[in-house]
Image (tube, rainbow, N blue to C red; front, side, top):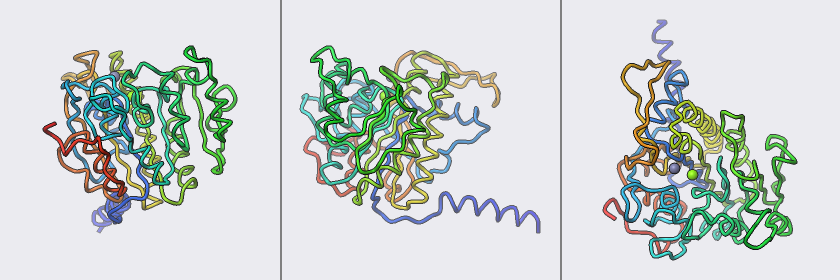
Length: 371
Ligand code: MG
Ligand code: ZN
């Protein structure tokens, strides 16, 4: 009798997380990008966390190719532009396709259709990954130009670093925080308020800067990503009855792997996973939200080597750069079934757009493992 009872208890837990039935179309999409998060980064996070990650709760998994227009190894600009616009582009590009034409992003499409939109990152908000959803520049290093696009799109929420590209501008001396405030955006920053003390009013768009430049690492005490993962969906849901598109990035998994700092990579992975947990809790309660977790590329040729144990991993890097290996996709909620299988990073855009029912973006490539 007892073993049967135990089995029943386990099944109950499983049912709550994976067997819930959803409709076919989401009202809201939360796209979560672990920059540089390959399978080994996930595996290292799993074993370092008592063999447990929120990622295990996703019922659907897939794999994507990540090459850019000409290179087998992508950078984060081309990788995020593939998700944002559905086109292959050159490394270094942000929101432009390979002929440098600006492409309408899924965030801009959502804005046009009356949905609420948001960007959350642990880099500067002008950094390549978030920038690819809102800006259109052929050179990702042009941070001041990227910042101006936050005034051109009616984005409802942004959280991340990089305030100096808004307030200490060398190119034109504009103060974009003042301009955003004049537009009605409630902008706050680390010097005035911690994110946990900010309670954004849904009547106004909200922005919060974590640092003048790039935020600290999770190891050094940066702690806002899981909180933002909880706050952002709650806020955006109140901003529009039509739904929302939210991108949340764990940016510094990539940076830790470039630095070949394995403990930091694990810390960043677990910080991102905690934010994933918050997004999942929202989606589970809401029932109309699709959560997609993926990566733009793997970083470091990361390996867990022989000789390590589950509680003391032997972690090595093969390169200080990115690699071309397939990266995983995890999906939960209405439409999640679409994300199983092996396909291309540009198809993430196509699938999100089709699920939202938005018209085709002129620049998106045809479906495209071959492109
Ligand atoms: Mg990034
Ligand atoms: Zn990188």
